[in-house]
Image 1 (cartoon, rainbow, N blue to C red):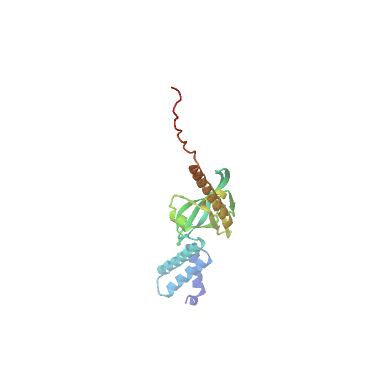
Image 2 (cartoon, rainbow, N blue to C red; image 1 turned 90 degrees about the vertical axis):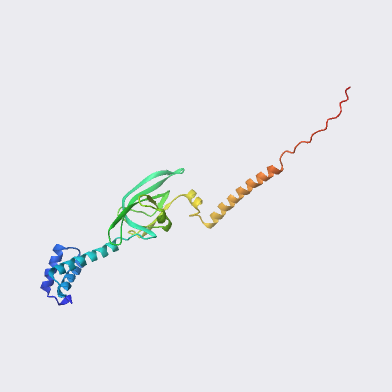
Length: 226
């Protein structure tokens, strides 16, 4: 229907939208079409202006939602800012600590409270930089985390780089949690633990059953002296 509007009238409204609303090419086109459709529908100029502004805002919100991946129940999503890296003693050796702020938005493009994130490891696979969009999975971690606390992560996806980033917590931590150890290694650890327990049990049983016998009392013989 708006195609029937004379080109000079369209040009006038498009110029008005550019100067009073602004935006990229698709936004200006969408707002101009909305204003012209309102006028063709018999509405006033003020109604046409309101329609143009509404169309521009709607398109902007959709673009913001698409540009800003939002968090959900299983993922924390946002853009990395104030990224810092430091070395810290972890057990008996030094490891690295990555800390950064995760700025995030809701589905309408409105900002949500930022999240302080920390990753610790003896080594890292992948990289994260200022301005990178990231996604941190973990339903259980998200359910325990509360606003204002530091969000500890061992794994994230760098959306900007399309890569996975992992922190290696070290062998001792993997043994304690059972993560990062193959099935043969877990079997060896299990057998060693069983052997130690069996050794302690046998030690206790042996010494309880083979303790020093109670000496028998020697009867007193009558004295030969008068």
